[in-house]
Amino acid sequence: MLKEKKNELERTYIKDAFSKNGKVFLKGWVYEVRDLSKIRFVILRDVSGQIQTIGLDSKTDKESFELMKSLNRESVISVIGDVKESKQAPGGKEVLVEKIEVIAKAENPLPIDVSDFSKTELPKRLDYRFLDLHRKETQAIFKIQSTIQQAYMEFMIKEGAVMAQFPSIIGSSSEGGTDLFNVQYFEKKACLSQSCQLYKQMLACSMEKVFAIFTVWRAEKHNTVRHLNESRQFDYEQAFADDKIVMEVLGRCVQYIVKRVMELNKEELEVLNVKLKVPGVNYLTFGEVSEMMKKYKIHVGKDDLSGDAEKKLGELYPDTVVFVHDWPLSGKPFYIMPKGKDLSYGFDAIYQGMEISSGGQRVHLPELLIERLKAKGLNPKDFKAYVDSFRFGAPPHAGWGVGLERITMLILGLPNIREAVLFPRDRDRLTP
Ligand code: ATP
Ligand code: MG
Image (cartoon, rainbow, N blue to C red; front, side):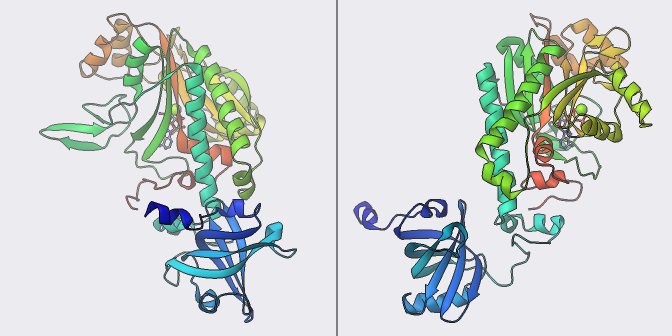
């Protein structure tokens, strides 16, 4: 069996066919069919690219030639043929078809337009995401998202951080505030994790530098272009660190990610018509940003930036990770270290006009933590195990979280975060 297989012509990816001459065996999806009666064209696509195949009445196997005019778009076929130079063909090469076989027929009509010029709206595309993924643009986004994850891991491993996995079902709220999705855990009530905050902190207090790609669920009933109810986060936590140290790490991390996308995804960036620049880094205090925004008559909250202020920062500092630090204490969660009475060692990072990350130095002192919980109207009893974890040798530590879909959206300038998640979970969507 194995021996027989060896004698078969091996499949060539379309991208590689361009550097070949002679016989190739291609597999892929029918993108377009053109019938000029004695000449028939099929544009074939696979994950690596697309190529024109040409059938000639005189040269192509009779049955295959017949087939060429009746192929449905997006059907899966295999093609055996000769790669030939052609001045008219895109890329300067085409495949003269010897034989075509249908591997899997696509029904006609397709439920959505999957051409490069598709005008099908996003909700409909998401209903048929499996088919939307036949499109070059959609594939480009998720190839780039794959690089973003790879680059994040590469960066963190080079930093000497340990990759961690945390539980997604938890016994009680990890942060307070946000709405949670409840689940029944045998006879107990549990919920889906809204963040791995407390776990990554506990881990940093022994392993020093830790990171994770962690799925979070937030039952917030918003319906915006920047929020999902299920999203993935790049989390980082470092012992013996303050806000300054981890902001610097985050700046380099975003720079590294963008640099890797520029290196590894040239073709995809071209498909999406995106020109990237490795971002610079800038530091401003919350107070400085508030003052600055007065000039532009843009509202800034007492302890939070408005969407308009984030947008303005994006305009003022394009291609820059802007760290807004010395954040008002009242605007940060209980676990963020106070800086004096009103400020904190917490920060947000704004990139291309939107928050990509929140972070800061944590409270590692149990008594202060209890005080902060109370100040936020939370019951320290509900956080006893967490507080107690800092009683037996917990160093100062700091960290941050970046949304994977959020950073994908901002790097690529996508208008809606749903473009940056394969199968979104939002206020209305639970399928596919
Ligand atoms: P935002 O102000 O944008 O609502 P947040 O301050 O509530 O975000 P954090 O809890 O600070 O969010 O989460 C850290 C990061 O995770 C954010 O900076 C963002 O990149 C991402 N993120 C947060 N919430 C969502 C969400 N609902 N959908 C997608 N990404 C999110
Ligand atoms: Mg935040």
